[in-house]
Amino acid sequence: MKIRSLITGVLVGGLIGSATVLFTTPTSGREVRTSLKNGTKEWGSLVKDVQNKASNVKTDVLKLVSEGKKAAGIVQNQMKPSIQQWKNSLDPQMEEFRKEMEEIQKQFQHLEQSIYQK
Image (tube, rainbow, N blue to C red; front, side, top):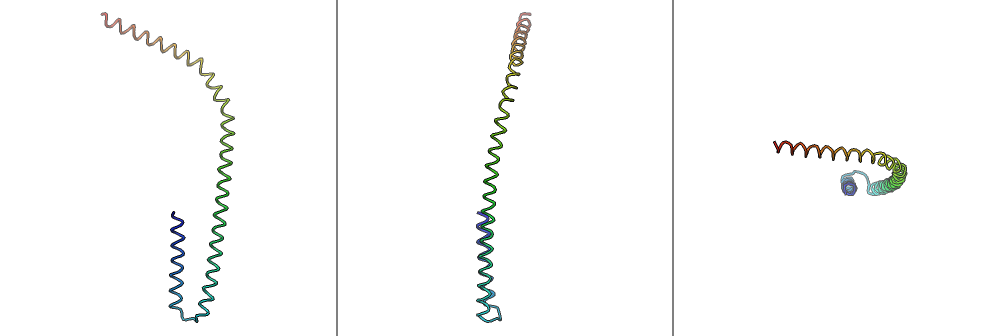
């Protein structure tokens, strides 16, 4: 939206500037018209150049996004076995940890019971 406002501002400013030059210039009408035609051609050329460059940038960004998705997929596929292996290596440790926690809970309950009995 900002680029559209900028382009609109540039075009309106160019028209106002052209009108100002047209009414305040001491040169003949023919010279002014020739100058305006040349200026219009230059502006048209600049606008086309900007459009082409914007199109090239868009194409490059789309290529980068596509390549990024491919690279992310490759990394994900390469990481899956490592992550699974890591999970598998943790399973026995998690089971041991779970048993230790159950033992701690039993001891804690036993301690509570002994405190309340006294």
